Image (cartoon, rainbow, N blue to C red; front, side):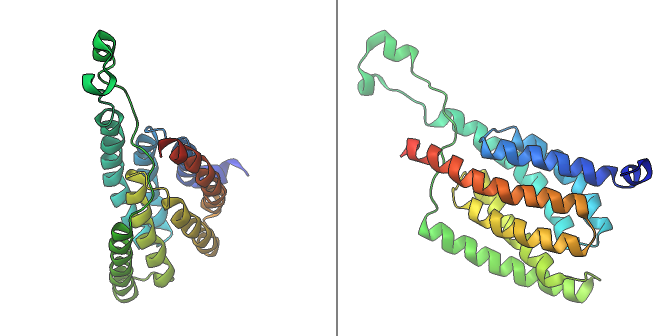
Length: 215
């Protein structure tokens, strides 16, 4: 790894490093992951443009928006379920002092209705992006580019709402992405997505423990 290679691939390497930090914060349910996500998304707009992965490039714009939304939802959730009423505790002034307790947005399981809606959204997004990429761009892999993008859109929304099953979607996305990026020569990004894949299994375990505490 020489200086010339580092200079040519600095942006991609930076995006890979911030991406690793992002998934670590995601596993820990730390809201600062959304700030890191904003930085990472901005970097990868350029990386995917160079790799001619146009759907993935457009996905970063969505990530920018959902990062702000996710920050809002996770921050607001710290307070909205922490009310302790006098009638519930009946502890006089002690109950008054504890009237507001700081709590995070809780991890939940996906509801059947939500799952059906998200599955429908995925199918529509996939079909629309595939038609656009295959007919209007020079993307060499429109089917896989569209698949990764559509599934990532759904998974990121689920993350913003702290829905446990989003980890399963990331395992699929990260596996397919690693294979795709090898074919495009984006090797630092391949390493990033392999780390994502491993951390997704860690996230499944960590979030499940938290979810049981909240039940």
